[in-house]
Length: 176
Image 1 (tube, helix red, strand yellow):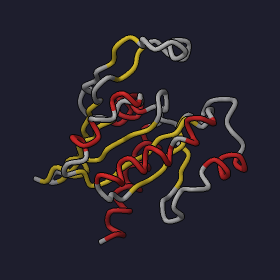
Image 2 (tube, helix red, strand yellow):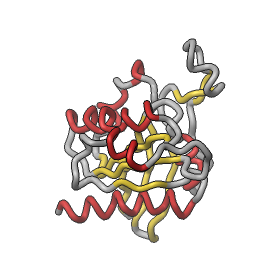
Image 3 (cartoon, rainbow, N blue to C red):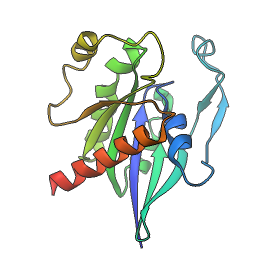
């Protein structure tokens, strides 16, 4: 049996914990604590302070471990730990937040400093109102490398989350 690791990253409130909860076959391990930073408390009550973890089985011989990073800058020291033996990176951005979308490249770049990984950019919360217009998204992601796929998902829809994971695995195969 082979176990592979995929990292899910993105800014605060981009949907990483929900992504893991949606797809994991085990009860996800989360490290949520009350938000303490002023200005962020109004957005949500709890945030990840270490990692979120879940698993999915591709077939009887392949298991994927999915690790989600915390979204706050002060926790980025954990990136070095998570990237070890990682096969792919999924960068999430909240499609209702210009700041979250514009920060996607920053999160991608942080991991690429450590190790070159096949990547996918996934815009989350496509099921919510107040989505950013496609033209604005294009401008906000103008620095995204052209070979990195961009998809829109609801991080509460298991099939769409699975598509993001499969797309990340396809990028891995394409690089070989």
